[in-house]
Length: 115
Image 1 (cartoon, rainbow, N blue to C red):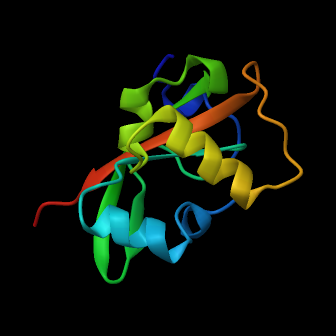
Image 2 (tube, one colour):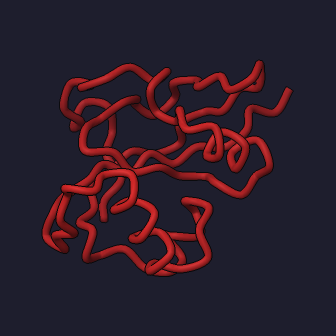
């Protein structure tokens, strides 16, 4: 797991507006229960601002990680109680997707913007 600067990141495959879209996840972010999300592409670069229900969150870090490297602590940053809970949720969202430990994802870590 390595933090990367914008210069080392690939081009974005989607816009930051698509980073957190599921209503339950939006609520977890707003409640401080979710401080990271994993995607199969880069949706934001460090320093960008994500707006959820008029509240701003700054992307602090973006880095690659394999699903097999994830820990219970990583699952907690996603708003889940354990890796098993996270895995079940992801597979329910993507029913035909197999869980492949070597599959690489992009971790986007964020925090509320303090005003």
